[in-house]
Length: 112
Image (cartoon, rainbow, N blue to C red; front, side):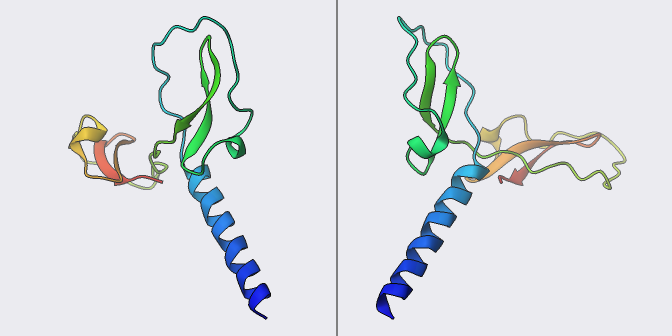
């Protein structure tokens, strides 16, 4: 019975870790110059759970810390005027992103 319980907890943990990694996206590539092309990874599963396997132009694929992405815009929201309440993620708190709501402007949203 204990083995079944531990197996269930392990499966839940693995699924949650995979879901957390799937919610992240690759950061914008940096401007480094590489001497040779080398793939450190072939897929996200080759990286730590908080990382993604990301392309680095001219260098290959590398494990990078994943970043949150904006939730999809709600097409049902109608705005009276365009207003930006943020200009970058730095204007928002931890776990928040500066996201564009179509025809409304940028505002801080919970990252997904």
